Length: 313
Image (cartoon, rainbow, N blue to C red; front, side, top):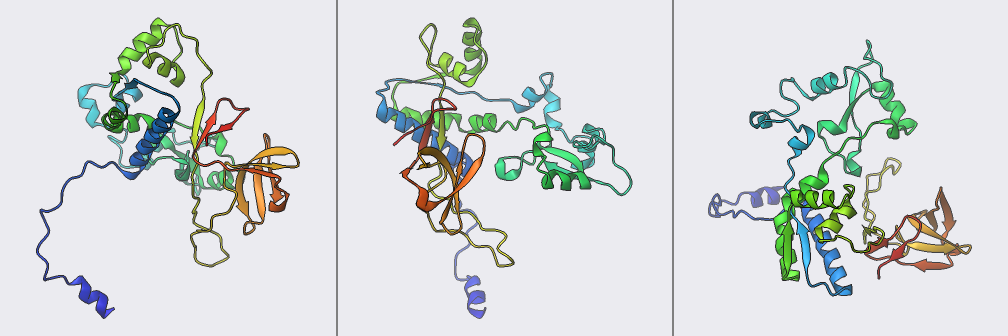
């Protein structure tokens, strides 16, 4: 205690008020997504000789997306303008009704604010992700797993991400491919309407790549797999939480063959002795000893369709 207190008194050091430099670094979550996009582009460039990259840089106006008739002075007035607090706004929006039972609050049954999309699944604290529930309905929602009954609202995470990293992404792609062409949202919309295409991600990508009458392939999906799964252990019968650092041989999203059938690994339990896998309709448990073949997936998963999966090396 005395040693720590003595080390905190750094009177001999010079003042450090104006020596901090502003950095252009992004928040860790945006930095991770940006690096994930760049790694995927790097992997594709290693397979295919690409000489030109077309990139759409768009700045999304979230408030105008929510309210197209918004005017200049209304940008300073958010959703909570004119309300005392967040709960008052939610009560007015939901008409003082519970979103689960659609009944108004009664005496002794107050409202509770609930996240429609949980925070651990990427939900935010914004009002469009919050709902009002009775205390009893909130307990019922979790005990009977009725989360699917709540109406999920759009979070605008992808639009915010694109608005923040668009020029940084363009600069990084310029280093990897000298021939970089930029386009904007209104240009994509005009070309898409002229080709009579529906607004979807793969249709926009086709238009951004200057596609017109070329033969198209089926859209594919890329999934990135975590290389480590160091999760915080909970419910340890009164013991303090600990971080699991042990890495098992089978990891989530690997493929194993048990009894001449292939399954996707969900996780490991019972100190690495049992395996939990996913079938098309349900999850199953098998001992590790019953694994006949193990297909290790490290990095990206390339999914051309929902039925067939091919793993990139």
